[in-house]
View (cartoon, rainbow, N blue to C red):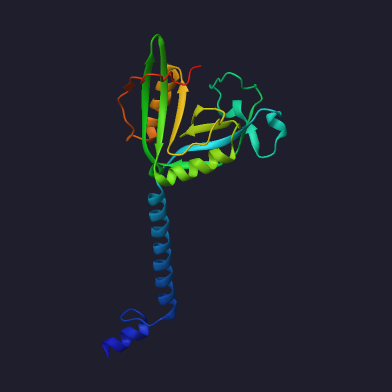
Length: 204
């Protein structure tokens, strides 16, 4: 009798369809959240974002673009007009899962010193960067790390497993500090390379 009364009240061994539906809804919602979390963790944290740069038109006249100086207020780059525009949305995002290593190198050529930031990609990351650079040759892009700008270079060649940014010692070290905050796994020590015979570091 106790079990029968319990069944009628919906408290013991309930067969009430409303309660069953609620339980199913809670379980389904929980599973959905877990799937989303798993996919986010599996994809890795966003490290680099690439956004198109437009220099031929006023930034306020282009749909889908914003003025670069409004985003990068403290950034100065030789050759960029004051009204340069950047795309609102990133065209490419590289995550921590797609990066193998980040390191700084210094190369000495007599009195000439070359400072470089090397970003090495995994196979997955290499496929993405190769497709992106191949489609944007001779175009300028803004490369972001977190909410900071790293560089606004022109893509001169198709990249595959590695991207190299050259700049002054100060700029390269600043890039390293920005990246260390969001990618602690990067190589901390500056790598000093001795050029081989005939290697002039790309100088004419």
